Structures are given as structure tokens and as C-alpha cells.
Length: 472
Image 1 (cartoon, rainbow, N blue to C red):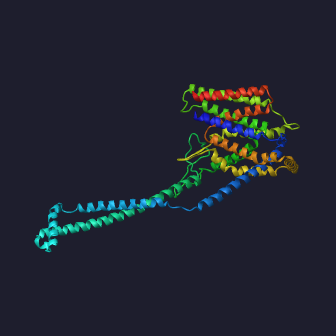
Image 2: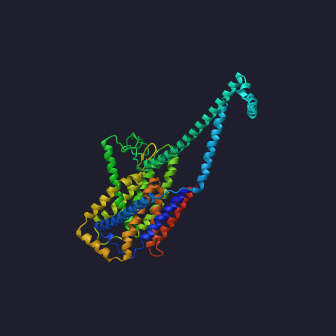
Image 3: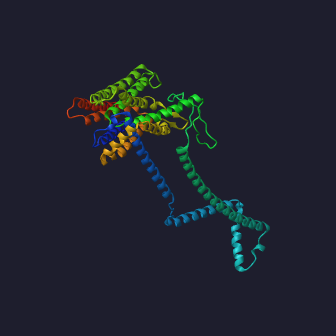
């Protein structure tokens, strides 16, 4: 049931974003008037979002510098115990080394105990005991002295080795810390290495990778210029689609949001049916493929019924030509199709890493900013004057909602969408977006509206069917 929790979390997050987006005091939105006005408002929102992210980066950098200058304090209560433990360990090692040195002595050392007592008696009475010993006894006494010297020398060597061992342990801990730091830097800053294509990887974009002399993964290497051109085109396409998603994935615009959700649903149905009906190792038999495609059809019918109910509440813009309607809604539909049909299947797979749409989206951010700037510069002076006049006429609360809250909500929506696709959960994404679309319809519809009641029933059936399948 872990995936059901993820589905419910997505439904709650998108529903919360949808509800917050509907808290504006002014219901008349000039973004429904034309494409140029919408792109200008989006450019202003992107500028405010970039400003907030820049401030967050600067504050993080300053806080990191302040935290880096902290002082390390020694725990004085643990120092004596540690010294005693070290000294006791050294004394134990010295004793063991001394005993090992004594093992090299002749086994007849026990016979010298009597001579030792005799020496003691001789010293006590003032006589010279060496005169009473034979030559063999003197040789044995010399052997004992030599063994004692060896024992002391072995004890000194043992202490020296113990000191070297402690120093080596300290160096080992320091090296381990440096290794962990280097691994973290390599994970955060190393470039992706691309190896041979896999079944889940587009073979037209990939090629073998190589590692540098430092062991870090180097840049992506392509086998030909055509594959490099295709990858660059794909990255620029991701940036352009992100820009269109920023315009379309907006719960303040009912029609555009509906078209974007319809694009997500359409792209997901096409790819899912192709996957389930195609023969693979997981579904070698026709019965298994038909069973999987049946679930796709059930989900698709329920989600499509919710979308049809929402279509009944469309408010068509007045005095708008067909070309303007196509420019408003066709890009939103195509952006939704791109996310669930192409981007969810694109991934670079290496020996230890796998990079998907999240990695590509980060590399497409420059294209996203470039398209936003070009769209704003392409607008006419009349459109700019219209937008400035509209913003000046808003209240403070409506202005804060338009310039501060809406950019953050759009950023969170796009980021969550990319994360879900990165985890290969396009089914949960489509179902959660359609579920929230039904709630959106209920929120904007009058009481006891037939379309709203039908959408509510569709939302309940959708959650029930999804939960029942996971439980089974």
C-alpha cells in the first residue's frame, strides 16, 4: 500500500495548490484576453521567482560561512579517563612484550632460582657468590641478564609500535573522513557517465562513457554528431515545455488547466497501451497483456468522464478568433502530452547512476529563461501598458497573490510533476491531476450542478478502483 499513500499525497498536494490558487479577490483575469498578456504576466512571475531563489541562495551561502567559523570544544571530563586507558593499554602491551622476550630464555632458568637465592644469601653475609658458582652457572647468569635486556628492548619496541598504531589509526580516521567528503562531492558535482543503450534508454541519444584519471565520471560522450544534436534538441525542448507548463499548469485558469490535464491523460493512454500490448519478458502471454491493458482502459474511462464533465463548464473567451484560441490551448495540450509520453521514458543509465527527466529539466533551465525573456520582449507596447495598468489596479492582497504566491505554487507544481515522472509513476500523476480537476470543477460550479455531481461520483469511483487494485 506504499504507492497508494503516494497517490493520496499527490492528490492532497495538488488539491491544496488548487484551493490556494482560487483565493484571489479579483475574479477577472486578463490572462484570458490573449497570448501576449499571458506571456508578460508569466515573465513578471518568473522574475519574482528568480529573485526569491537568488535571495535564498545568498542567505544559504552566508549562513554556511557563519557556521563554518565555529570553534571546537574539548570535553574535559573524558580526557583523564582516556589518558588512563591509553597508559593502561601501553603497560599491558609492554608486559606482554616482556613476557614474549622471556620466552626466548633457556628452559633451565628455573634451576637458577636456587642460585639467585644463593646470591641473595651471599650478598647478605658479604661474600662473593660468583666464586662459588661454576663456569656453567656464570654462563646461565649471563643468559638471564641478556634475556632481561631483550625483554626491556622488546617492551620499548612494543611501546613504539603502539604509538605508531595509534598514529596510523588517527590517519585512517582522517582519511576516512576525507573519503566520505570526496564521495559526497563526487556525487553532487560529478558529471554523468553514459554507457551502452539499454531497453529503457533511447538508443539514438546515448553512447559509451569513459572515466578520467581521477576516477570521477566525466561528461557525456556521444558516438556521432547526430546523437549530440538530438540530445541538445531534446534539452531545448524540455526547456520550452517547462515554459509552457509554467503558463498552463495554473489552477487560476480553468480552460488552460483542463487542456493541460487532457494532454497528460492522452499521452499516458497512448504510451500505456503501447507498453501493455507489446510483448515483453514481464508479459510474454497475450492474457497478461490484455489484463494490463484492461486496467489502463478502466482508468482512462473514469478520468475521461471527469474531464468531459469539466468541459461542460468551459467559459469561452468573448471576441476571440480561432487562431487566438489555438495559440492559447494547443501548446498546453502538447506540453501535457510531452510529459507523459516522452519525458517519462527518457533516461540515461550508467554503471552506478541513472538520470532521468529531473536531470534533463535542470539542464533545460537556461532555455526556459531564454524563452521567457524572448516571449516578454516579443510583446507589443500596448500589451505592456495593459499589464501595468492591470497590476496597478489590483489590491495589495491580490498583487501579493499574483506576484508572490502564484509563482511559488507553480514552481512547486512543476517540481512535483518532474519528481513523479522521475520515479516512473506517470499513472499516479495522471489520476491525481484528473481527480483534482474534478474537485476544481466542484469548487467553481454552482450548487447541485449535474456536471459537478457527476464529477464527484467519478472522483469517488477513481479512488475506490485504484485502492481496490492495490489491495488485491
